[in-house]
Amino acid sequence: MNTQFFQQLAGLGFTGNFLLNIHQDETGLQTVSVVLKKDKAVNGLPPMLFKATASELDEKFFEELKQPVKQTAGLITNLETYQKELDKAKKNGKGNTDKNNKTASPEAEDDKEDEQNLFTQQADDTEAKAEKKRLYDDAMEKVKELAQNTKYAEALAQLPDPADYPEKAEAIEAKRQTLQAGKEAYDKLTASFND
Image (tube, rainbow, N blue to C red; front, side, top):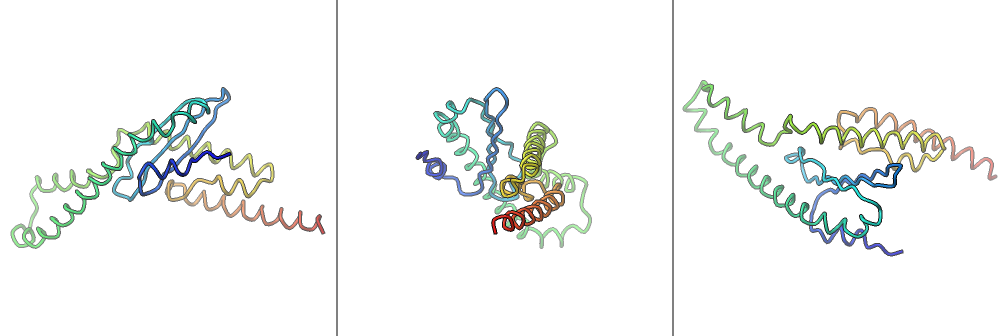
């Protein structure tokens, strides 16, 4: 079976991380969540969601993904360029503002706050946060099921990446250690039965 999935992914022309999460419900519909990440400056981007049957996704997934990826890549490039110019302006202007203003005006403080909020996640993307939490919960439930069926290697592979869930990094690492210990014990046990 030759799907050319990775060739098509490479053909989208995005350099960075593609985070894919696929959920299949009991009716056979699949929800595919795609998040593009390049650096910390654009962490607040919401996931692209595609919901269809497997055959529909086979036919149109990359066709439908192409335009949003192109737009997102352009946005990321613009943000990176803007951030570099902003940093350069701060660096060049810092000497002048230190000499001229020893106390900052309230307007200057508001400008700094607006500047900091430019690249921070906004409060109104609760939907993206809810989707991210759901994806995490689904992944951890799948890990739990696999571990209960002594499929430790698969469970380890299904663990969410701690970089994607920094607030859950300790829990993910603890689960990883538990699964690794279970895998090692299970491997020793099966090896002793095979001898």
